[in-house]
Length: 383
Ligand SMILES: C[S@@+](CC[C@H](N)C(=O)[O-])C[C@H]1O[C@@H](n2cnc3c(N)ncnc32)[C@H](O)[C@@H]1O
Image (cartoon, rainbow, N blue to C red; front, side, top):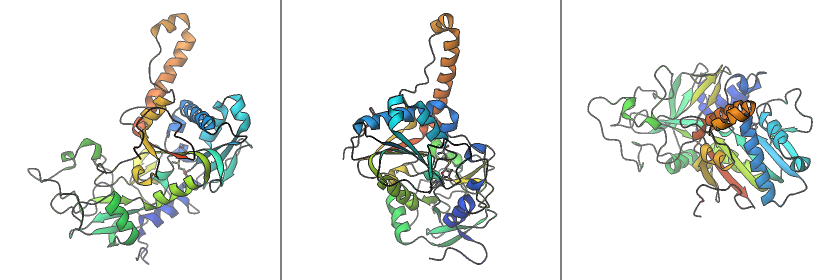
C-alpha cells in the first residue's frame, strides 16, 4: 500500500515516528515530557509510592526472588523508577534492580544504579510498568470517505491532511475486530438516527464528544462535520502497532506483572472522530508532525489485552493500593497541626490522581505472567 509520496504526504504512523523520535524529534528535546505536560508521575509522589506497593505485592507473589526487577517502560527522564526505588522498604530495596527503558538519552545525574536501556531487559522477574507509553506509540488513522470507504489519512508536515488508499490487510482486520466504522461495508454498527436538523457535536454523548471548537483536525474529519447519514468523516486510530508493542513488552518478562496505564477507550464506546491530538507547553494543540509538539492518541487498551489480563480504572487501582482522597479528620488539626497540613496536601494530590474526568479515569491493564494477579479488589476476568 502506498503511504508516502514525493509531495511530503505520508501516513500518520511514519509522520509521528519521525516527529517524536527522529533526530529533531519532540522526545529528543532536553526539557523532556515534564516540560510540556503532567503525568500521574509528576502530579504526586503518592503515585510512585503506590507503584512501590504494587512491586511489593509482585515480590510476594514471586516468593521474594534474589533479584526483583522494576522496569519503567517509556521512562521519560526516569522519574518513576527513581521514586519507586526510594519508596521501597529497605529489605525489598536491597534486592530491587531498576531499569529505565527509553528512546531518549539518559539524563545527567540519574542514580547510577538505574540501568538505561533502549529495549526492555530479557527474561527478568518483577514488575514492568508503562505509564503513558502506549499513547505515544505511533499509529495510522483511518477516515470514512463519502462513499463509505475507510481510507488511510495522510498528513503533511504542516498538519494538513488528505485521504489516501483504502485501509486493507491486517489494518482492515484490526478495524473490523476492534473499531468498526459505521457506514463502511460490512460494519456491524448501525448508522445513528438522524436528529432533527443538522447534527452537531452536542448531539453526541458527552464522553465521546470531540474536543472544544478551535482545535484543528482530529475531531472534525477531513470533510467537515459528522454526517450521520453516510458515516463520512468518522475516524478510527488503528491500534495494531500498540498491540504488538505491548505483546513484546509483556514477552520480555520471565515472571511477574506487566501494567500499562493510559488514556483509554473500550469497544462499544470508541470516540467517533478519534482522539489524535497534540500537546505543547502544557496546552492541547493541533497535532502537527514537525517535531514541535507531542502527538498522542488514546489507547484501545482492550485490544492490547492478552489472555489473563484485567482492566480497571486508575481510581480503582490506586484505591486498592491505599491511595484515597479522603480528608484528614479535623481533630488532627488541633492535636498535630503540622501532620494535619501534610495529610491535607496528600489528600489533595490523591484526589487529583483519582479524579473523575481526569487522571482517575485512566485505564490500568494488568497482565500477570506466570503468577496470580497480585492486586486485590476489582473485577476478575471470567476466562
Ligand atoms: C508521555 S511520555 C511518559 C513518560 C513517563 N512514563 C511519565 O509517565 O511521566 C512517553 C515516553 O515514552 C517514550 N517512548 C516511546 N516509545 C518508546 C519505546 N519504544 N521504547 C522506549 N521508550 C519509548 C518516549 O520517548 C517518552 O519519553
